[in-house]
Image 1 (cartoon, rainbow, N blue to C red):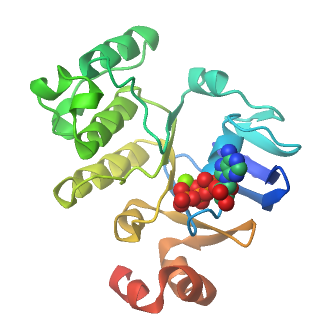
Image 2: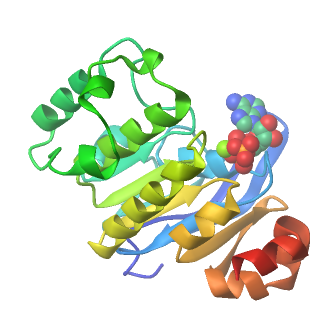
Image 3: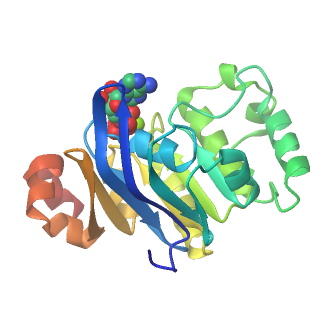
Length: 241
Ligand SMILES: Nc1ncnc2c1ncn2[C@@H]1O[C@H](COP(=O)(O)OP(=O)(O)OP(=O)(O)O)[C@@H](O)[C@H]1O
Ligand SMILES: [Mg+2]
């Protein structure tokens, strides 16, 4: 394993009962780089993320975060060490105001700060005073990404961050990820919105056929014939180049 990986998962095998989802897979995240997991529905992206964060158990696999190796990682410890996880299914208690969530965050983590993040993610005071159950899906996602930025993490893991984000706000989210990466944060993303994920990403990991392929930079991914044929579709690749 390379020492310049901020966060990595190696040699994972994961089954749900008799259904083997990953035979041998993993990923790595470098400081200042955005790595994105792409693959069809049910290929195992969320499974890999949850195994790496200790939210799913496996019989094999090795996690490394900031040079520390874990056979059994635990999210509270990774979070304490500077990892932030934005799950596919959302983050907030639906009935507690957004403002209250931010209040908790800044008390809990001394390095957390809301300075600039509400403006960056276009979050109004009125949105802050509502509970997430009274926000639209896209507004909630923007608040969650603002929450991730306010945490000031060293590593951000966001599963399907573009889910429900309307086109006008997509650019804000892409820029937020690029700004974080430029400040040295290592980022892991997943999703299907390749038209948004490609400009946000540096490296692509293809999750397919129960394994993972590190297919390189976004430019290299667009030249990877099998990936283009089987996942992107040839028409799609031209639009992303
Ligand atoms: N708790 C579970 N019990 C049984 N099978 C599961 C469970 N969670 C996921 N699976 C199965 O494991 C496979 C991988 O699921 P996973 O959620 O990791 O896929 P994904 O790549 O994240 O998909 P999507 O793009 O739809 O989010 C799927 O076939 C899914 O049905
Ligand atoms: Mg998923």
